[in-house]
Length: 424
Figure 1 (cartoon, rainbow, N blue to C red):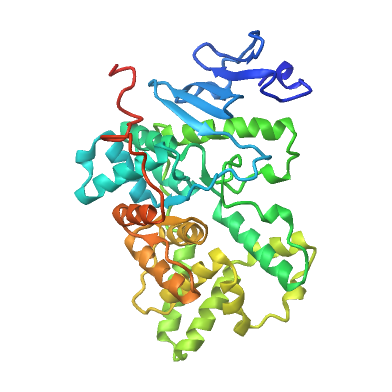
Figure 2 (cartoon, helix red, strand yellow):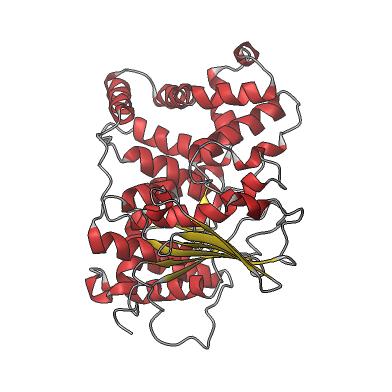
């Protein structure tokens, strides 16, 4: 908001009712509880006007961000509060790989597009659970990036469905989670207090948590206007990313996949016993995480030399003590020691993001290959399985856990795409 709007001594619903960005009229303003209004002009060249969003309203009483698109569709998002002790309110977190998000998008727009017809009914059920506020369906930066490969109306349809069901919830960037896990593990090894900064939830409304970016919201004063502004902007920026009509350029296969392929072939052609191959894979993963380890040491005020006592034989236990890294190391080891493994560029996204989701979400729908690897990793580590390769199996497990759809909701789920102004 403009300068006069954030000089109030108290950011409170007792004073403010709505904060509004009105792009068609190039203005932003506030409606106060006493009925008064204050508006400021938005400069014509301001990038905020180049958007698929028409209006953005922050509702002080409900603590929502409400965005209306240029096509007239309305998206509600929960807004972040640094003072919320239990933002999930007991709701289970359900993480979806992008292929399953695409299925949900198709079901909400035109179920006849879904190739696997057995997925239509459970998809409708999952959509209703999200719309009823019974489950949380967070987005990751991988979801957003993969949506960028779509174009035009297809991009709009899937992006709108994702934003409408996620309601502002995100999975924290796995690189940040990895850094948090190493910091916690090393703090315990050095008998130090685990910093509060790395104990933040993985699934969160925290502004832009899906991206490992600056400024880190966790470093901002909870009472600062900067944090408050980020909390309002984050849902709108994410929605804009999802709806952008121009597809994002595809990335070439990363060097990461090529390096893992060479290492797999090295193990295949070696005469090492199976146990030795496993240890070498754990060492490879440890080395591959060198940057996260160095950042963790820096945060704890320690040096690389403090790790000199760690031996290769310690790595399986150390990696296995971390929720995400334990799964990641297990799956990577299985693939390293399988002579038939063929590494591809997208393996990086699948392994990193799905390992993070499998470690911290209540339920995960993944692509078939990684789902099976993660189930095996859970079994080795003694974890309860939460990985499914179909929406049908996932929804069945959600219901068996005690989550039910409201009985007064009948028929197909509400579509965020159909029913816009062009159809009313």
